[in-house]
Image (cartoon, rainbow, N blue to C red; front, side):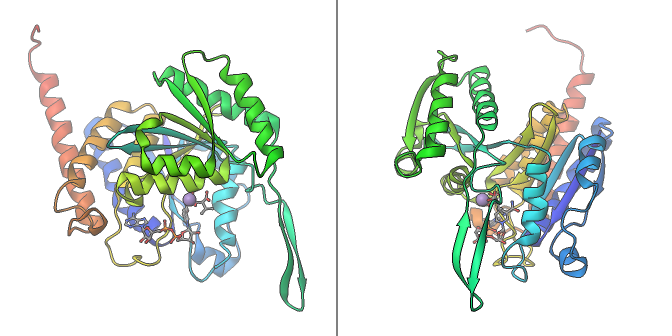
Length: 353
Ligand code: NAD
Ligand code: IPM
Ligand code: MN
């Protein structure tokens, strides 16, 4: 198994580097044999060489690695985020990672949010007409193909049904954006008819956001076009207790490619202070472990992160007084203890219940 690690910029780098010792521990304690390579793509390289996602990177990631973990991209020196679009959107689109799963773990229950991850307003079709140095016409096209909407909706419905969920909500804005809106509604209605175990509903995105904040317990599974899913995931993160807790998986079900990253960005306001919450990055590593077939280790890692998140060692965004490093050191210790406990139990004589 090989894991590609792209720490990125700002706190992305800080949280990912703090999480890597977990991998070393798991390799040692469980003999996982997961090797990792770190790729320094990000703002510094872009500014020094003009390179975002290097030539050949997509092929190499697709063929030589089983999973990718990314921190975040974003740097105040690159205000238009050109490097981020090259690297992050380049990976999502180039590897056809059209499903972005962003679970919202809320006190009222988990909402499984599926965000389409490659099209919509993110296709990069558009242009600008400038007059006397300032923008006079600006166009960003929203493009959806039936093929992508169908495979995305089908995957979301199948996953919700397979995991015992009973309700699914399509989020759209067909009252104001009728063309792509209608495509999504048509596909959703046709595909949802094949899943009678799911009660299917639709909601305008504005009203959905209102109800999500007022009463998240009314949702179980949510399917959203790209930009709406982006915005909903930050609202969901706020309901969860902060962006430092929200993780995500971008996958291509057909090829098995997977990119795992926190929902948050590079947070220039706290970068360099050593206080970024590493939980979302650790949870993203747990998702990567799941993806590589190490589900048991992923569960133990998640339990350890949740436990430390409730202590004084947690970072200030969670009300603690800890640091990124301290938080992860404690997580690693507790994970080690859990693994030791498992090993002890494995050595015990079998008992009958
Ligand atoms: P952000 O997510 O970086 O930060 C939003 C707020 O949440 C900030 O106040 C920040 O301090 C806080 N926050 C975020 N993560 C945190 C953590 N782990 N621990 C504690 N607090 C945390 O959003 P932004 O400020 O709008 O964006 C900063 C840069 O990141 C921009 O360049 C943006 O384009 C980029 N960005 C990248 C990604 C990505 O790479 N996936 C995602 C979002 C934003
Ligand atoms: C996210 C981010 C990205 C997105 C940006 C940085 C392009 O906000 O992963 O949520 O919009 O998808
Ligand atoms: Mn976002």
